[in-house]
Image (cartoon, rainbow, N blue to C red; front, side, top):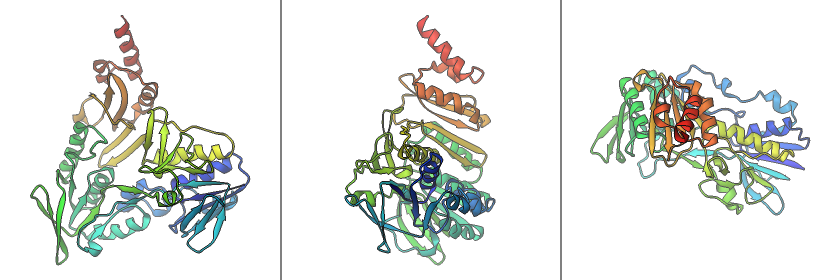
Amino acid sequence: MSVVIIGAGQAGARAAEALRKAGYKQSVTLLGEESYLPYERPILSKGVLQGTVDVGQTMLLPESFYKEQAITLMLGVRATAIDRTGRLVRLESGTCLPYENLILATGLRSRPLLGVPELGEQVFCVRTIEDTERLRPRLLRATEVLILGGGFLGMELAATARLMGCRVSVTERNPSILFKAVAAEVAQHLAALHEAQGVRVLTRAKPTHFKRVSNRVHVQFSNGETLVADTIVVAIGSIPNTELAEAAGLEVQDGIVTDDYGRTSDPHIWAVGDVSRHYNATLDRTVRVESWQNAQNQAICVGRSIAGDLQSYTEVPWFWSDQFNWNLQILGYPHLWDHVVFRGDPSKEKFSVLYLSQGRLVGANMINNGRELKPLRQLIEAGTRLDAELARDPSVALLDAVARSVESRTS
């Protein structure tokens, strides 16, 4: 009996930790391509890039933990193939690792910008510690920074670069930033926050032509704009690392498909974290969730399940993003909603946004209003129907609003 974990990021490390905490006594091997100890990524685009957080503070667990728990840590190592019949993981070195259970925690890679000329050292992305350490000295001397992509990462990078004194523009090809992740009304408020801090935000802007002139890059966009920058950061999304799973014949659909326990189409292989497309009973559909919470808690469930305590992972997805003086938290994974309720006054920069589908709460945003996280999570888990007018009033407690909403429909 042995467990091999491919991917030494947050999900892989938490799975290994959970195995030991659940009393698993057999061999555990954790391998990853990076040379660093497993670390957390969210802070890279903020504190680490800005220089207020040391790289060492991102490490999940000290090196001594792995030694004390008899977890074999293999860093700077690449897995090249999975032999499902023989239950072996083949490494680039030619070594083969046997397994009884294999956990795939292979994560994501940054989506590259294709079809552009070689722009060399003027183009950056942020996914790893090495990416961040390469970009930081550049931002310290940059003057004009162009962020391609107005998702969470792009907007966080824009805020950090602006705080570091750069002139910053963000472009997004869709009609709004954070497209489909939040309601257009929320995206407008966030764009206005950035613009008030000196960030230029352009939407419906797809780059069509790049031209390098001396130390600057001229970028033409589909909306007719031309922007000039000395530094370009690409944040146009991520690609799940499913190649090993595909080559091994596992089911893959924009992620490695698993059940709600994290098991793939092979009962001896599990998938966790950003790369996993798992069934979520609360949402009643499969989802692939790129978040800190999912990377940690799904991995813990899988570790416990392999150790003999079978656990289904059905948590309501939760994300957060810090940008300037905004702490944006997102609950749920709504793909359809028909009504958006602002709870509180957005002009005061502390409010919540509720997403309703046929009266049922399916998601929420909290802006500098984390105290409402717990009740909103409970309401989403319960599939609660809300009275929009009652829920709109922040003086009415959310749970009270629900009770009164039920009363108003039954009276």
